[in-house]
Length: 192
Image 1 (spheres, rainbow, N blue to C red):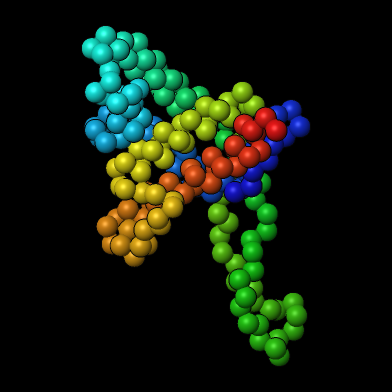
Image 2: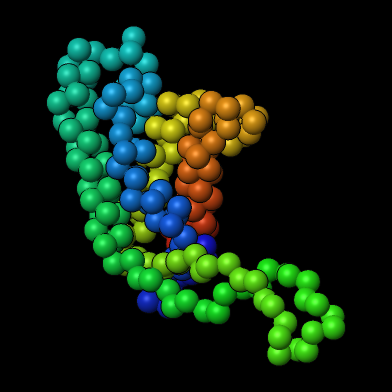
């Protein structure tokens, strides 16, 4: 995957493989915290230590802030899915050579060359004003994955254990979001 900030401020993701596309399209499922109390606590924490909250403050939080947060989460995901409708297949180049040893006695024109089928790749242009929505949608998914599976970049898990538990793909998704969020902050969202 190649990432670019274009002169007009829009973003271009190119070289997206089918796993990247599938992961982006599954953002709503990955970011779904409804059935996961731990994930919901991460995304909708109380605004203060519960002992310091008055009943009115707690009620205001639940009545006014939580619905706005939920709407914001849904809007971010809607924008990402809308942008994904504009995925563009990239033109296929010649298949890569994968190193079959030719017969040294064969004439050059008869050398056998083994090639693998081309893996389709896609590109996606994201409007500049959608960058923050992408950041937030990936952050939501990252927080849900972290709460659901105990994932944390600062304490990488044993990959063999993840493979055995069937959670290796979730780790790669988590790390993809961490990497893309870092790039977005560094290149796009940081005003300096």
